[in-house]
Image (tube, rainbow, N blue to C red; front, side, top):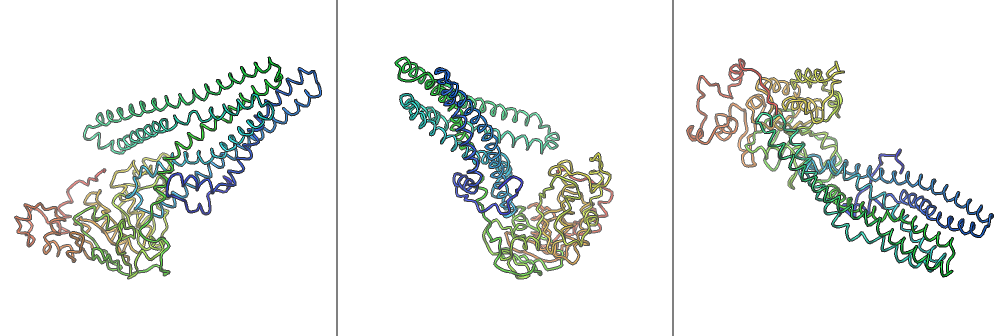
Length: 617
């Protein structure tokens, strides 16, 4: 696999049972690239380590005054230099290719897993952890995968040098063969402590980053309550903890680096002292002494990769563990489906609650528990977080349909929709039937002021569709983000649309117009809205009230206000005292000077003089 061939047509099925197994699986799937890097690494390292032998031959030829041997040695040195340059160039190319392709494979696997799990992913793994795995952790894992081949080449080169020295000069070769493994593995006992300190540093840095992100996201609220100084002090303390942890980690790594300089130097001194003694006794020549000295000095270069591979594994192991934890997550249902059929149509039925949303109708669902509403919305879309009976669409269980087909049939918009950065045109460029135009969807979602705000915030966009939306739509208010997300869902025009509190952040006037636009644009389609807003409930064809996880009442909004006390308590936000005062049996007659929410038009008439205020959550 070359970089220009990315992405993979099929990244494969990873072994996500543990972090080390994932690393081993990634390495096995890049055997071709690993072998190329190994061969080029062997060429490079052996050429570098062959230079001392050439130097020793040249010195001995000069001592013996042999011009022929000196010229031959010069030719060998030129050949070694050329091989060193070629090997280094192609080793770097192969290593970078291994790094990037391993990281790309892992990113594809993570992206596939995110699409596979859908909204269940962030319920089971923190969103911040998913981002960390797909960015920083991927880089660390790629580093280890590519370092394996260079380490293997370096280790084989050290073995070759030791064998060559034993053959060339046994008296000094034995000393080198014993000393090099000691130098290579002396720092290994220090690595666990260094790794643990590095883990503490990363953990504290992650907390500081999370705190900074929360502060930036809630800056508008913090200013409103005067909490900037409080959060600034918290971040200052967190950053100081990161600094102290970084200093402690750097001290340990500095000790390891110092040993990597000290121990080879001691070995070199011992070899020189022993070599000078042998030269005085006449047991070795000057050229042999220079050769052994140069070989010990040069072999420090491949020895550095012993520490690098230990560092790479230490840093990549926790990263691989986090990646394996994400990749090991599975859906509760089979994504391939067991039923080959066309997209079903008909009533949407949830056996767990008894909720039935008639086909081609606008159904509103009222839940007293917001968390239950969120779980119900996920279940209606086939994204159940807990095992149980599947939701039926036209009598067909959603979990028996292929995942793509189920998602095409039922679209769920949760209460906190995400806007991706890009232009408005790109935001609305979603898989759709083509029946609903973007202009109609924006009008139904009452996005006129949003378009004006986008144009004003863009310096080079006169057309609102070309205006850019910042990451997660942070430059927009909560109500504006909510309406753009609603417009995106309307453009998709699915057979079944499930909306969880789609107007919770907009004012009552805008909410009334959205309710009318939603009903008009979704005419002939199945729409389920989970809400407690009287304005939306009053426009629904049918209202279903859920109490303690089951259907407790069904009917029109105005009927349920008078006949279902629990429903009235949820919709009108009655307190327990108010319920007891009303007898909790029938709806009290609303006072004449305070229109009841179920009165529809009188309520809107009473709200007309009020200024339209949109929450900026």
